[in-house]
Amino acid sequence: MRRYTELSILALAAVFEVGGDAVIRAGLRSHAAAIIALGFVALGSYGVVVNLVPVDFSKLLGTYVAFFALGSVSCGALVFRERVPSSTWIGLLVIAVGSATIQIGSRASGGR
Image (tube, rainbow, N blue to C red; front, side, top):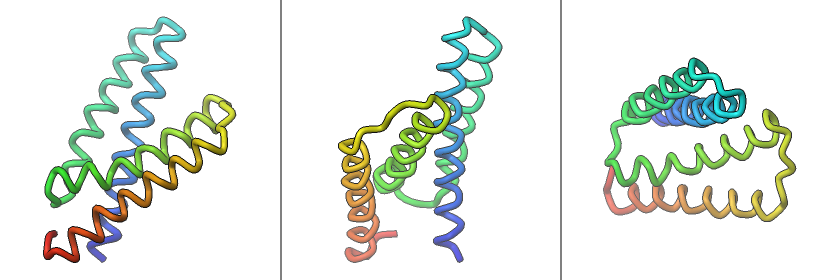
């Protein structure tokens, strides 16, 4: 159960970070200071949420980067209607394997 909670927190953090970046991008494009400020709030929320996971900082962000990468590429494709090349999807796979290696390696060596 704890693993699912941690994964849910990481996913929520990715929503805040990617969403905050997307909102700031939209605010910059429309020259709307209030929208940019909303993006700052979302990014600050990301910082709080991601640190709720009780894992060493290096392992936490090494694992989290996969959530962020998937969220950002998905947001680019779905929200900004960007064409995502296959090389980007392959890169995401490499990032996911790296993140899994960090987690599996930390468990194998007796880490949290």
